[in-house]
Image (cartoon, rainbow, N blue to C red; front, side, top):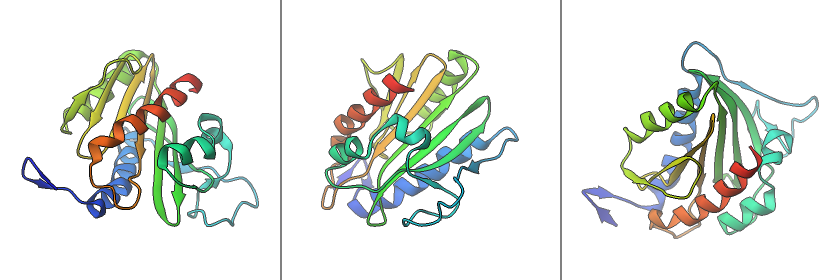
Length: 189
């Protein structure tokens, strides 16, 4: 599909999601802080990326595997959790995988004030094509190119991206899925 001079394919979407996750972590790590992965003792197996916490933790408190599977449209593995912070925000990045493919990526950051959270949302919004989304948190923005929904609620910033199931090429259609998970996360963050 060609939109505005940009060729969009499932492959480009699936390649973009890991890059988005890395960008989220890099933005969160700015300001001299570092990103550290949390890992309980003895949690080495299960196909989790090295350094990640597979299972519950903060990610399991935010969303269940069943909730992510329902939004993604298929079974997903346990969440992999990475702590992230910097630039006045601290938080957690969570990823659910299905057969090596990113099914969902959710990041929740807390700041000292609503101003800090909103400033980060506005900064992200300035670098991506998309649209404001009414009725989600205090302010929300959906990037039509990446399929990422960002929202602030008080001093919290949440970023949600649901992966496209096999064969899906219209990424603007991901907004309802992102909103479904966003509503759950905002209610629990």
